[in-house]
Amino acid sequence: MKQIYPSSITAGGFAAGGSVLDHEFGKTKPYTLGVEEEHMLLDPESFDLVQHIDTFLAAVAGHELEAQMKAELMQSVLEIATPVCDTPADVDRELRKLREYVTSVAAQKSLRVGSAGTHPFSLFETQRITARDRYRALVDQMQYVARRELIFGLHIHVAVDDAEKAIQVVNGLLVELPLLLALSASSPFWRGEATGLASTRQLVFAAFPRSGPPPRFRNYADYAEVVGQLEKTGCIADYTHIWWDIRPHPRLGTVEVRICDSVSRVEHAVALAAYCQALVKMYCERFDRAEEIRSYHRILTSENKWLAARYGLEAPLMDLATEARNRIPVAQLVRRRLKELRPHAKELGSEDALEGIGEILSGGNGADRQLRVFNANRDLAEVVREIADATEAAAVPA
Image 1 (cartoon, rainbow, N blue to C red):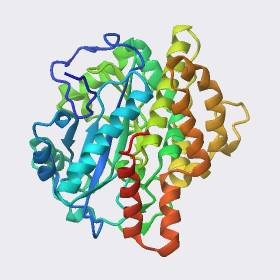
Image 2 (cartoon, one colour):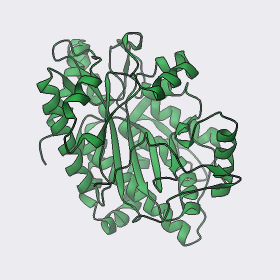
Image 3 (cartoon, rainbow, N blue to C red):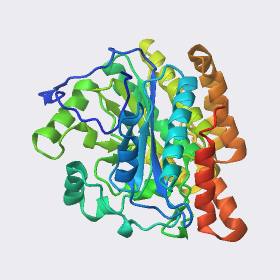
């Protein structure tokens, strides 16, 4: 049976006791990957969202890929998850297989599927909550904040072989999050309006508790103590109810990058996975060499995140790695980082996949493409059609 990295998996059996939280770091091969995508279920004519997740899941029952698909909070959302992959090339193959199957099942049920950070015009007020105890409890607890969470994310897991190392890798990656957000931003519309933001999803999700960038932890015991206090007092059922932009995932032994919008094109999802994998490897090796993993004040990294959400690939970010800390284009920061990552990508066998980051920089992210389509005819249904076409075309093997 294939192992998968499902975001929804709970921490059953992995309770915090004092300052110790059981984990699986080091029990799997380092730098393996798992990718999850949240997809829209669409009406093929109006391109509005439809509440058909139960119909869809019933249609896939018994199929070999059934375990890699699940419902989410809203009945118009489908999540797919790859098995554990050694390389981005494996991610490419598995995502294409999943998208091809999802597309074919959707067509049989007179549906379309699409992948982007938000649906451009559907209203959260018309969405039905999935009939699962987990989601009903979430709405009961969070009320309006949960009901308006009509957003779609791309989550990338990278395995790390040591718990202390994982914490320091998360600390190091805080400065990288704005770059990942700018590259993946694909939600410039909300409730039928162009918001002026590249990633509206980020601003919607910011209302959730325990979201946004995590605090910097001193070590794994520090992290476990915080999680243990939240669990012991009943604030959370387990650590999977901490929805930071990036988080350790002890049960899976991974660092999970959660800041990315869902992206329409499979090659962009694969490129982002390759980028995250190489970043994690770079920071792991710095830790192994006992090099300093620099940290920056939360207000500075949060400001860069806001700029990335607002302006996408045009964001003028603070260059925190230099003493001057001038503002420079995010694309310049990404290209500089790519030079550092290429040797790591070569060792990982992911050089070709990493080239996809350069293609995003030259061709634009999902927000850029959606706005180009919209500006032609001011037709939001046409925008969603383009999202669906790009998502379903990705099912064709490379």
